[in-house]
Amino acid sequence: MLISSSTLSAFLLGIVLYAMPNSSQAVDRAPSNLANSVRDDSNTLILAKNHREKRKMGGKKKMGKRAAKAPYEYFEAKGLFATGLVPVFPEGLDCPPISSPYGSQTRYDGSQRNNSHHDYHNGMDISLEPGTPLLAVADGTVVHKGTAGQLVGNYVWLHLAPQSTQLSIHIFARYQHLDEPSPLNVGDLVKAGDIVGSGGATGTTGGHFGSSGYSHLHLIFSTGPSADHQVSPDKPLIKHATQNYLDPLGLYLDKSMGAVTNHALRDLSSDQKKVSVPVRTTDGRTVPKGANLVWPLACQ
Ligand SMILES: [Zn+2]
Image: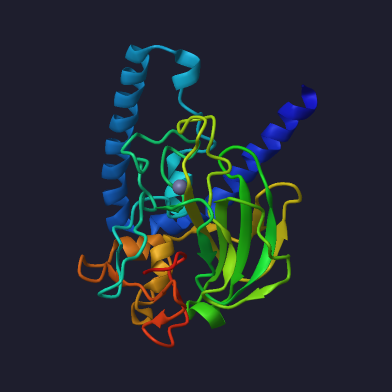
């Protein structure tokens, strides 16, 4: 007991230390702070409403809220909120759409999320048939892979360097819920459009989705200033500097906008938020031709 409580204290202290530079950064952003406080209020209202509804429904243990690990401000500074970006796929192609966007507080079926980061979605979901090939969104390197338990399942991490994304940040991308462990090995280089594994429902059974689970890709982007990182052995985690979230749609945004944080993405105009997404087709074409980024699932 002593060991676990001191480990917990060290962890919490780590969170406080981590949050500090981000909070001071947020102070420089007066207009969005104002907007954030409005968002926080509505978030609190939603949570309070859910709490009441869950109490009415009974089943305390099963329906209970997952306790948050840090105040929402910590996650807000890291970009955990909806950006409003919308994908626009090449005309004439049928592309697997987003089933639950990044930053959403609801799942693909419209139900309210319940997680330890204030119920916000920290990735982007795409529903799929089990076994559907998952594609590298850009040239990259496999930096971690494994099999975790509930909420994650089989996963593979890619490092996407600025040279391959034309963004000034380093992206660590986690593909999760793979049907089978990724066939790739740590250190493997992948080209945009290469298969990194097949999609499935691992890590999704037993909770909200019941015994059959929910077959989909959950794709997370964690960003930082350098390629330096530390893999957590036997855990689906990578530690690296900053660890901000990025809406995966931000990858495809016109680079002239230079937006590499979710705060900047959120501030774009609604026209700018329509993101043209290059894709790979199931018969192996890249549209538009020569694109060096692709959607993580092939289009028909
Ligand atoms: Zn998800």
